[in-house]
Amino acid sequence: MELNSQKLRKLAPEIDPLRIGSGWKPEDLDKVQIIIESTSGDSHPGSAHLYKLVEAVRKGVSEAGGFGARYFCTDICDGESQGTDGINFSLASREMIANMIEIHANATPFDGGVFIASCDKGMPGNLIGMARVNIPSIMVTGGTMSAGPELLTLEQLGMYSAKFERGEIDADKLIWAKHNACPSCGACSFIGTASTMQIMAEAMGLALPGSALLPATSPDLIEYAYNAGKRVVELAKLGVKPSDIVTMDSLENAIMVHATISGSTNCLLHLPAIAHEYGLTITGDTFDRLHRGAHYLLDLRPAGKWPAEFFYYAGGVPAIMEEIKNVLHLDAKTITGKTLGENLDELKHNGFYERCNKWLIEANKKYNINLTKEDIIRSYDNAIGTEGSIAVLKGNLAPEGAVIKHTACPKEMYKAVLNARPFDSEEECLDAVLHHKVQKGDAVFIRYEGPKGSGMPEMFYTSEAISSDKELGRSIALITDGRFSGASTGPVIGHCSPEAASGGPIALVEEGDLIELDVFARKLNIIGVKGERKSPEEIQKILDERAKNWKPREKKYKRGVLRLFSELAASPMKGAYLDYGEF
Image (cartoon, rainbow, N blue to C red):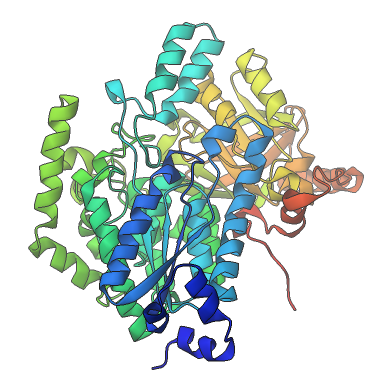
């Protein structure tokens, strides 16, 4: 089989001299050519350390007889832009990263690729780009940061900030938390979006077995990167592409793992968008179906007790999969050339779990604790919960669906009738929550924050202000067409679709409407007006009348990337990918 790079060299005589001018040696030109694409950069801790992984991959590529070319498209940090208009660029950046990968890999000839990222939009952006390029590829995940003193992790900053605003702690305590929450490089040490998407890459079969979400400072991570470089050269020679690996079976495996780890709700934006690139359809209903009856086993933050640093020490994705083997498609293909089931069997015999346990012993000494593997990843029969971790709610308020992470929601809020308090921006709502302008029994709405409204930012500070309030956290709900951080906890419902900017029912909610929330029955409905219950037929008539008087808002962004994103983004429940329509 003639390699793609060699075919294109014959068509473009300028390639050879230009690559020699870039530092390639003449003998490198005939080798298997691998693009090493990463989000390496100084943007945040999840990308600041990736260059050493780039070099480890490059070494592996070279020793396997290939040549690795380094390309970069760094990502932004949701945490650094939180609470500012900068967060509006976050979801759009996923699409732009994918676009740049598509450009990088298609503008010049490559036979394979290794994609390296750690965080919220870098991970799905690279997975989407990998799908578009569809050359033999491997994902290398950049791991998680260490916990700070007192096992402090970044998602607790929202709680500290809200407590400071309410006068419950002094400035010194808040500064202490800020200075100690991120003691190393890597993704934030909880099962947020970054950690979730690292795990999803392995669960889909696109990363080496056992490689997802290692501590970013671990020497094992360097070894995995090196081995990925060696393996991608083999994949390039075999012609095995991501589209040969990613199927409905592998996507369902990922969703079952998502249920088991209580993964981020943002995964419901990212997996459908990734599937879309392969011509496959994943919906909120797919997640809801697979989460029903799923055993939730991972006792890590934000829903559980421990930092994500402990994930690898307990055996990582393979240990999770061993517990749920009965519900997985074990014959799914992976980038090793073996099936998922074969990979799991091999790990049991090659010392993988013994190596993980050695690191767990070291971590126990470091933090002066005494955890076992079962404290971190429960056995299937000793599950934390048996109904997965998310539910997709539907009704006249969210005809296409809305998402709640019920494992992070107080049981008191699973079923309630609440009074609507709509706000048209997060700033207004946050002010009302912090200054006790909302009451027990309210359904607080933040709308016009969906993809078309303002780029679909996270409502993190508002959700933390609610969940950290001992009274409000168990008595009100927050409903939005925006999204939440993977660190969010409490009675928060996001991705409400259709969004307000598209004229969805959330735009029609008025003060005093009665809102039915029923997690068990998967319902989210307007059931009354001005505190008075109405029949479904009466409610629909009222909503139809309100819709006649509704007018689209002026576009928030009139130029640039957010104008493009707001024009083309699909609905939140479809994945908010750029929808170019039919041609």
